[in-house]
Image (cartoon, rainbow, N blue to C red):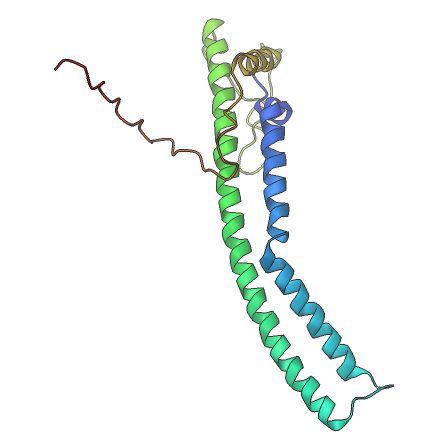
Length: 195
C-alpha cells in the first residue's frame, strides 16, 4: 500500500508548482488591462458621485456634460471589462493546462517509483490507500496491516531529486514545455563524416 496523496502534498516539486501557479494567477491582476479597467471605473464612479450630489448640484450645462461623460465612461468601462474578462479567461485556461501538465509529471514520477519499489519487493498488487471513488468513498475500505511503502517512496523520490541536476536557467520563464509526444531533432552528421 502507498499513500500517493500524502507523498504528492509533501514533495518540493508540488510546493514549487503551487507557488508558480499562485504567482501566475496574481500576475493576471497586474496586467495593464486590469489597471485600465480600474482607472475607468474610478473615473466613472467620480462622475456618478458628482451627478448624484444633491447638496451641490451642477448647473444645467455642466449636468449635460457630466451626463454625456457618464455614458461615455460607462461604455468604456464595459468594453474594458469585456476585454479584461476575455484575457483573464484565456490566461486562466493556460495556467490550468500548465498546472495539469505539472501535476501529471509529479504523479507519474510517484507512480514510477512506487511501481519500481513494489516490483523489487515482490508485490503482486499496490494500492493507493489515499484514493477515493468519484463519490468520495475510499477505495480501500478495510485492510489488515498491509506493507506500507509510503516512507520508502518519499525517500526514493528525495534521493532521485538530489541526483537530478537543476533545470537550466537559460530557459525563459514563460517558455512552454515541449509536448510529451515531441520527438528530438535528428542528429546531424559531421561535415567530414564518410558515407
